Amino acid sequence: MVTVSGQNLYQDQISETKRQRKSVSFNCKITGRCWEGYVFWYQKRESEPFTWILWTDLDDNSVSSDTTHPQRADFSVSKESGSSQLKIQSVKESHSATYYCACYQSSGTHIFGSGTRLYVTDDPIKTPKLTVYPASEPEPNGKTTLLCLASGMFPDIVKISWKMKDKTGRTIEVPKGEEVQQRDERKTTSMIIIDKVKAVENNLICSVKHEGGNNEVETPQVMFTEKPTEVPPTTMVVPTCPPRNESQGPATLEVAYDSFQSMVSLNLASLAYTLMIVKSLVYCCGLAVLLQLRNKGSRPSSLYIY
Image (cartoon, rainbow, N blue to C red):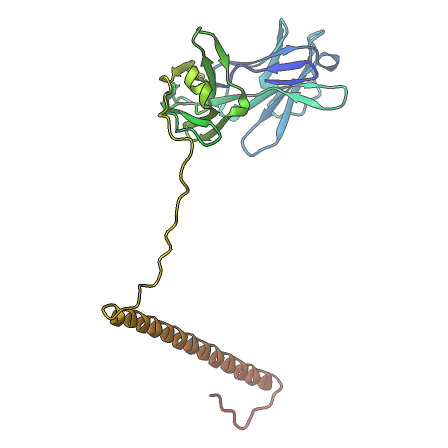
């Protein structure tokens, strides 16, 4: 949902999965008023820019006829009590894309809805499996982390949200600022960072919205083991040379000798590599002189290359 200047565009369908030659509709609920009543519909394919399909006037239900979209004839639009519906009567694979409704503002900008993804396939819809991982131990700032994983679904688009249910049974949404989501193929992970006090005093609920149906999992009561408020600083032990005594003297000398041998070997290798480079440079210079003399038509009487 997008909200700007009192206008709300809400596309409640996150995805639609259809077989070829089936019909599909995309709904866009509008609260407030678009500038001059115009609602636009756009198509967005993978790795391609937005393509304008058509616009419609909500006041008289007229539809634009000057669009240049190559599939314009496949689309129709209708108006229903504060909403605009885009329809495809017979879907094809080439219709696979995300469809957005948009409002035009007098300032010259467009406000877009959240979009609905269309999948044209014979694959069956699979609802997601929800897994909630226990809370981590609180950080020094009093925050703790919970994870909710939605996996194994098709289509792979879901919307995950978190709710809190207090002791009275009242349920409230967790602010979006406390949630982070990561999406991979057929897997979406939502991580919530929340105060320890809230986590202990409320039951947290992971809720998922999917084309195959909505589901939610209530986390068990979060409990933490109390720890001391002060933690002693970690001491790093730096190894030092052993004390000099007769029993350890020969071992120390042996280590030093091995280190000396390694250093000498490294220096010899570096010297040999340098000599090889110098020899290659001399050879290249001599070859260049030969080629230059030959191009001038003269032969050198003798030229030795070492």
